[in-house]
Image (cartoon, rainbow, N blue to C red):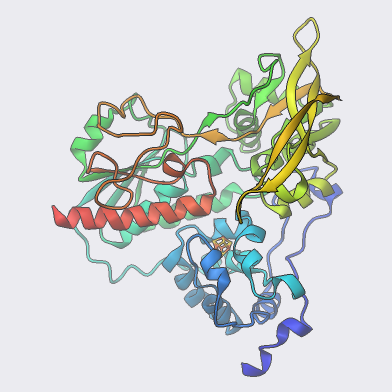
Length: 475
Ligand code: SF4
């Protein structure tokens, strides 16, 4: 193996094949193909085995990346899949949707001069291949307990929590208001980034592990939280961040101003041939031949622009208040959006949505911004808005994609769950990590940290499960 340590000098970084823009915008299928055995080995060999794996540190779940790359080189896919699952409950999903350029691959030692090892695509390859080989997690060493834990929310935090609990012999029952598992990943992340069959396969694996799912169940409506608290030994809440941030813009009440999530949800439901509400149908039919303007510059904004182009919008423009370097999302997704014909207007702060007398959107007014220096190593640059430098962008539909924050549930107060009154984040400053002010209730993911990545929610869910296990055994 030693003679191959310099492979990165000889072998270029290769991503799996990607569909050409004109081929991919006519459907919602995933745009990347899968590595084959030989290409995955070849790309894995590019790992320098640098001895100081910054990739592992930068990966929010601290995956054992160089170790599973070595197993891929040796063709040991099942062992690699087992190792992936020691740190990550949804590796095939993170391999698809993590912003690797900001995380593991951005920290790869050879990134700057030679191009990072294609870590995300190899992670996806390992797990997809293991599933195709019939692999399921080896739980033969698990010692069953009599503990039962309820998990509210089947998003990444809840699923990761259930995974770790089941691996510790604890019965996990997951409740969710949607008709299937995934939370935001189910309808909020478009199929061209995450095919929903991936979620269906993961659900089967979790069910084989003994995790139970109760979908179509809204806590506080179909069953009270007090009842759940009585029936189970502990509860984890991971219901995400769904309250939209709309910004300080006039004209938000005009017809054809739509929030990002209802738009993405309607589109994904339609592809999945699910029943759409009247409003969801309207959101989609009015997209055809329209001039769509998306406000925001993160991954959700990129999901919106790329969905709008697939819904045959006439033009799609994204307006972002900083420059490209300061965009919060994945550089890969921005590049994909641009390839698909999306125009991005940088350094522009939307100030007003202008409508005609029938309340139909006509244009968006934006003010030019000037960037200041960034205030910290990982922070984005501050900016000032020049209100005298205004311009207009023609629009017939505006999508608001400024982000989301957590929404406190009405039963929080009664259940003694403290949260920050401004940010709405649940406070978890009790004795154990992720334990709320009610010691029987734990929380994590977007609910606690605010809107963030799937992979950070996975980390929280897993860590919270370890706290729950400690709590249960101490009772
Ligand atoms: Fe990279 Fe995300 Fe996988 Fe970590 S989980 S190795 S950050 S793709």
